[in-house]
Length: 135
Figure 1 (tube, one colour):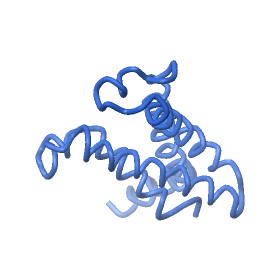
Figure 2: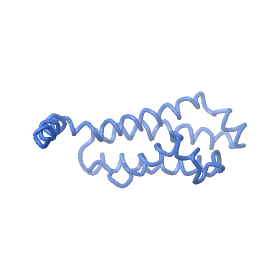
Figure 3: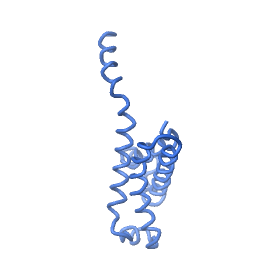
Figure 4: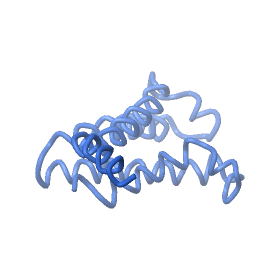
């Protein structure tokens, strides 16, 4: 059994560098799509549903789209600048998702609906990159 474990570890050791990239691309693309789906600006759905001003509704859409895009870009930039871009993008994602829970899904708190939705994973992966940055 140990021999099989060693073989499996050898296989995955060569590709483990892909793990954070899969998470980064998944979150970046998902969040970018969430933001892009609110275009053209200002997003009437946010204005009508939440009563946001056109400026605030546009800011939310741009923040979602931009944070997804810059989360991916930040991974390609080495050093403190890439780390800062990653963490700023992740912070934006965490703030947007926290507000989504408070305003759009307040009835979800500590229910199975929260833990079976994609929103909790967007929030948690955002926290991961906020804490970890590019390291």
